[in-house]
Length: 300
Image (cartoon, rainbow, N blue to C red; front, side):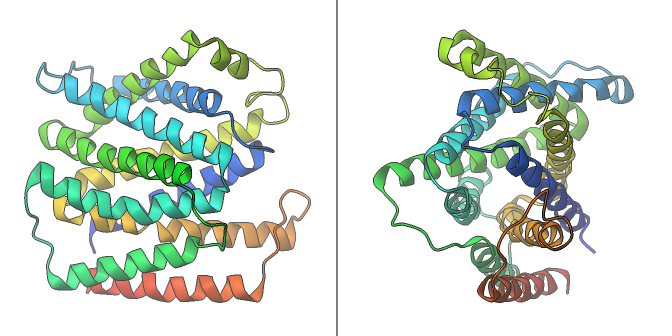
């Protein structure tokens, strides 16, 4: 069994829990600067791990890459929330999820050269990508130029973050690389305080951290934090050639989320209820079959 495969599947389970929390917190479209700020600020808790892994400063050669990676991640996060403010969440996440593996494949080749992914693994990648797209697809309006610009840019930033993380983990141990990236994400998030409009959204009375949302927000961010650790660890473990496959497994996250929402809709409809049609169930079954087939080609 491929260790990175188990780790990334577990990561996507926690990402689905984090996404559920975000869904409950955000009664309306998120304020991009505000939500990016709080997600970035929460990254500082990773510094609590330093006493357990030992304090060590990054080398002068690695430090610029760590800073660039943090900037790229925050930029991707902010642009994603800008897209979510203007367009449907399902539409945005589908576009980002579908294009990211392709960007990772191209960027991985540019940064690290040609990989060693064989024909069987390429076929598995195609199946996983199809399963991911089908699982997340919802019929929506025709894409506009503005929509494509902002979603493709966000996808590119998240893809570049994948590659830059791999570059850092190739030249440093996992924990120190991961913690220093998160510390700089925290520092970069502080720059939103220099914007008057962003400060207004961040400190609004009915903001992300009001009494109604506080517990759910911290649950969401804790789940997201665990998911980020696991995803980064999977990036650390996986060979460069397998990074597109790593990302194409995102369809598993959509399936986890569907099952969680289905559970709430049936047993706890007062907390969360969504209409689950036969067409949606069939769509999820097809995606599950494709993802299962892709996993089978990877493992066997």
